Image (cartoon, rainbow, N blue to C red; front, top):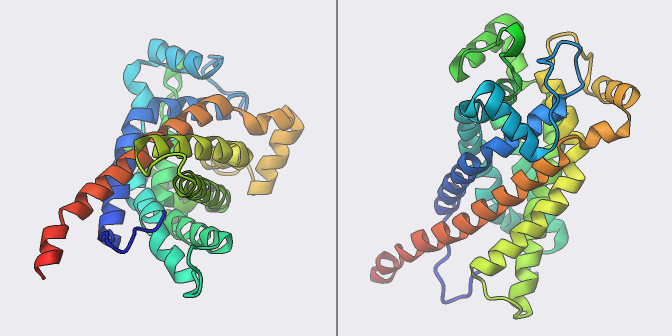
Length: 307
């Protein structure tokens, strides 16, 4: 993301993957309540069997959840969320520059838009297949409520993995891979490409230096663009993953049921917490990623010079 100059030491692929994983986990811990609020708003109105609670807005959902089910419920599914970031974000973000270089012609001084999009498609697709089981468990733990006698399906993260694999099938851990793949291709291409282009434009035109303010502004713009484009697919993905066996026969069936019963606005349920979560996640992750990557690369310089 903006190539280093000849005098700078290039961060290795290992440094990028490690930095992306650590930064993504930190961002997830801080923004997880917003993610839980987003999931609750997205599944609201889906089933006749519900807790009877009506959630309104991002802050209202967080407050209601904390009052009715306890503050810790906002972090239900966090272990699976962190497992997801380690297996997913570390690859889709950490491998982006390396894959982009692979797609970039030797004649090109700077990567083309096509090579940036191709890199986003590749890293996003690979990461989804590896991290999908963690996504399924995370969403289901966030969605389940214990109010009004509703018995929780799972008692914890590893219990969820076991029950899903034994009572539904091992294949169910990859349930919703298609909408999640589409969602993350949109997110990866929009988020990384927008961030990359914005950061490059700001630095190249000398509007901002390649430092925290530049990273923050680029991340905010990337977060808004990503939320706008990915919201419909994100809602369908959440509904389909959280559904019991047999509720929807396919992903298109899930989308059509939503459209018929709840109209097109259902595809943008949870938009505000989704944007707040993604924008804040982007800011925390990209700023930490850039700083951590820079510090780890600096620590390699004496060794490199000595050799």
